[in-house]
Length: 248
Length: 271
Image 1 (cartoon, rainbow over the protein chains, first blue to last red):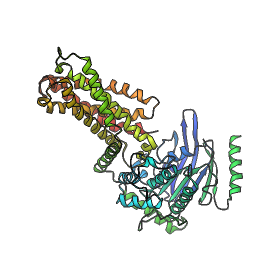
Image 2: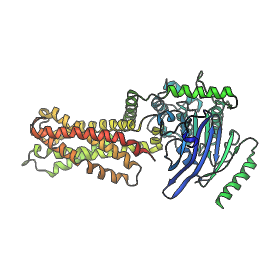
Image 3: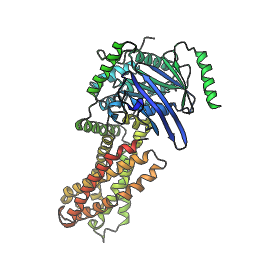
Image 4: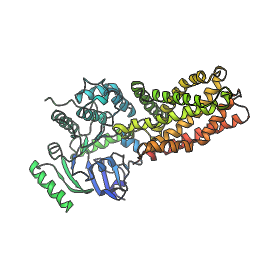
């Protein structure tokens, strides 16, 4: 039995994958990925387009079923207790997973109620303030800019106080102000001890805040190391060595 | 820039940031155990409440946007007007052909609604957002079904009196049994339509596939709908002879199809 199948042995391991493979037709998006993420870690996964980062994240989020291999979240196979698992993870995706025909506040309250959050209106108000949208709470989401949508998507993902936060290219389309606010929010999440897994192809983001870095290419994790001591220049060199090496 | 406010409410126990000490390890184990013991609300009542939330959300969006029901209404009205030109009611009685006329006017616009229900979820990847909640997939189906039933019944409630005006028949004496027959068959039609709406939402040419699948599977239901409606328009009782048999069959169809769709919905949503 693999560690991912063996149940809640180590409470420090929040997410684990063993030989995780996902194919789309003949295309292998994830190729026998092994992964262990411990509680409180801020893991950033870098990789070029098509490396399998989003597929890995969506599989961990239980949105995609693995073709083979296994995952465990909080020590449990998500197929066994999907509701419990989903109540503990939050996904910040490319799109905000928000209803354009509803206001920001109504979106958050709706999701809060779906997660049985106590006082969803109060929680929504606090989060809207945290993401700097307190002046646009009643506006329809379809009137929001890309950056505002991303911030609201973050608020949505945090409505139920997830212990594991998954971020898929959160900086895409953000202006400088919104990117700075997002960095602050991620710092807050990290400071609160939440486990964060962020995937991005932007090397300049995530380095300062991450406790661990991975580089993916061609569906495999090619590099996995602590972020401490890594500089922007050394990361860039390493990234190109790894990605070019995987392509060769 | 000031640091953003903490996203954890005051008093909430967050896991410790550093996992090194044994105390932190034990605290985290306790934290997980406590949250796991609390768990999400997963009882039948909680699931029904979530289904009601999904339905209420769809109704709220519709009330704001008026994208769906007015389009269904005008489509149904156009069908009625076109059909009114197609029959010579100086020689034919409405009760002879009215059942077919009414159901054609009801079901074609309803297809628009089934497609729209999941287009709403496809925009902004909201279906993924719903799937990430602790709600059971069957709960999401029941919520979408409830909203579709409300939309279809609203359209039918508006169209029925207009059909009486357009075709000159006396609606009042048959209104109660006719409303019952329409409601029972509409539930079955929505049960099938909601399922196939979800199935075709993520497929190429889903808009073409949806009516083909829907009308293929709904043939027995439509047959029952036309037969029972015809009987009621001709002054027959609901529990007379064959009408009763058709109604019992329809109720069984509603029950079996809703249950099967509820149970199988998670396989439809999986990627």
